[in-house]
Amino acid sequence: MIISFASSKGGVGKSTCCAAIAAKLGQDGDRVLVLDLDLNQTVARWGRKSKLERVTVEAVAPEAFTSVFRAKTASENFDHVLIDLAGTREATLLKAMARSDLVIIPAQASEPDLREALVIIDDIADVIEAGATKLDYRLLLTKLFPLPTRVTAFAHQEIKRHKIRRLNTGLVERAAYREMFLTGKAPTEAAPNGKAAQEVAELVDEIRQIVETDSRQGGRAA
Ligand SMILES: Nc1ncnc2c1ncn2[C@@H]1O[C@H](COP(=O)(O)OP(=O)(O)OP(=O)(O)O)[C@@H](O)[C@H]1O
Ligand SMILES: [Mg+2]
Image (cartoon, rainbow, N blue to C red; front, side, top):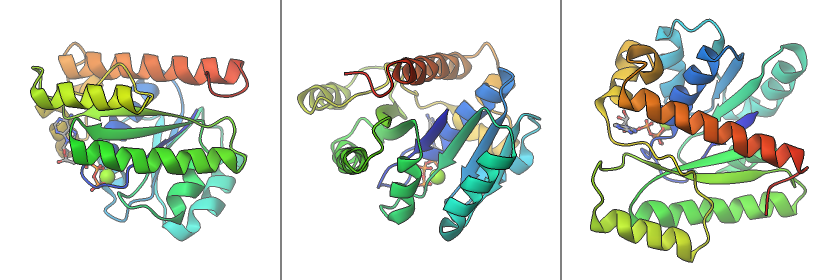
């Protein structure tokens, strides 16, 4: 699978879910390449701390993206490529999305985040129109409060109104996600039976199913 993590807004949880998902895929026995295109190198720093053998993390300068992507996917055998993008809307975002099977758009259940997510969804529609017909996307709700609030109710209403495709699994605000960058251990390694690990495992199952279904149908499901 080729998955990009995109948002035109910073701090929504892109790097967190990218690293957590990469770790789980690696623990499942798959070979994972993570390309960190953010100059902050959040995921690349995590990769240096991580002990997971099957996960390779590389920091890539935005201008080198296409050549690195081409070289890595041609010469090395990875089952998945995960692309962590900067929280800005620029050319690399479109280039990464155009090469992906799935774009995951992390967003908090808030009006500003959903508004920004709609901007990316519009860009995805453009990329599809330009020829990336297999591309699909899902919104991922992140940093959720464990209990439903008025804001989450509003978010769900807006998701429905705009017919946004979203992952059923969301990531709750949990210490395990913050600790991952400190220790290098993803939730599925640090506490495999914990709630965060369970959440990530469900998320990865859902993602695998979406990409499998799309590829069986030769493009995104209706
Ligand atoms: N589910 C979560 N629970 C707790 N903390 C979280 C969660 N998701 C993200 N965070 C924290 O929120 C902050 C921003 O997350 P992250 O770096 O993943 O966002 P980002 O979208 O990659 O940001 P940027 O645009 O700056 O790259 C970090 O401190 C991270 O630890
Ligand atoms: Mg980031």
